[in-house]
Length: 558
Image (cartoon, rainbow, N blue to C red; front, side):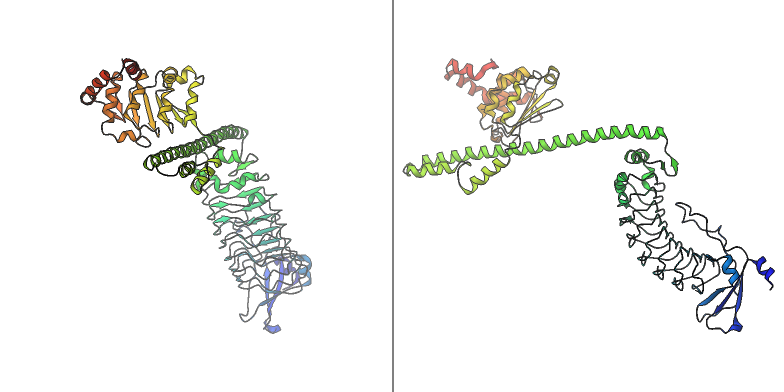
């Protein structure tokens, strides 16, 4: 072949195997210019199949399977293509030995069958290595390539990111279309700008610290459910998360803390199907310029801002209600403890009084000592513990007043003072039910006149933990104008243990024409039974008691 043919054919390469003599030398011809490397890397598209990049066509006439092929170029060829070499689509299973190419900067092995990276450690000025679409299972053989800036290993069989320790100058790393399950061993790549991990087996995103120059991260077509550490990437502008398993913004909440992100994609995720998707993303990432490859309009941004304010108001109100609910719970618990302490004091005093009556011969000093030990404020293991509990809760309110709809609830004796407030006419008129809890019934009796004045429409009274112990205590309710319903909770009201207590209430408060007691409708038969049981007793009592006493007992019942 003459020189003119060589020029017409492009580049004339001579490749020989290391085990063959000179006579077995074989020749290859490249049918076009070897410059098959793109002028610039397409952003977020390194996962694309480079089918449009046709490399040099080399016809292999003969080879040996016993060792590596050796590639040699003539002086003229080295001058014409001194910094680049393309060996794509040559059906190579190994990397050939490349001698005398110390100035090589661009090397292309696309679309071959190479299983291992080797025989290139001498190319220490290499800045771009393209091994797209091969059968490589492990990243190796790159430790001497300290100048490497672009490493393209897409569409291989790599399972783990490794052996990149010396490649601190990497600018672009393409590992799309592999079998990688974890992001690791890249924290030292502080100059890396583009990282492509699309079409792998990633389930989560983290371990990105140290990638201070990263501007583009492609994670499309994985199995990602949550994202972390993205807010630690100060230069990240483009993040592509399309076609993953992200279902809520909470799982990618770190994105809201990124001040540099301007372009992001979520299409193909469950989250993108939600009605609130777009507004939520824009509310939390106001700096975005593009969402799902579409430019964000000013109207969309304005609507997101309005919704964000409303959402913030809702959150504040919800937080406020949560605080009030918790305060109510703590206050009621505290009132309950105060009530239990009080009941224990009363029980201890009663016990001591019984002891005095039953043992009159006991030494007076001993009686005094036992009386003192019955009070929580005095010394003693149990009493001291109760006293400490009381002191520990002293910072919490000891009573609670709550208006919920048409119900006024009073917890603790201090709540009775609320009846002296200047209630608005509207609020007072709405109250139809008044509930008393952890308050002595005998204390409640004193405020009943205020109750019927302040809340004229209150027709339902509830008593829980009020120490109703005797039937006679119900007599005090007669001073009210009207009561339609009465609820006496068995808890803390021993009077309900009397079988006939309901009939006594119906008889004593018959002028109210009571409709319900403890949620049960009052019937005409109930009224007749009440009159039969207590009518005679009432007659006897009225004939034996002086007039001033009758007036005190009956009150408004007359």
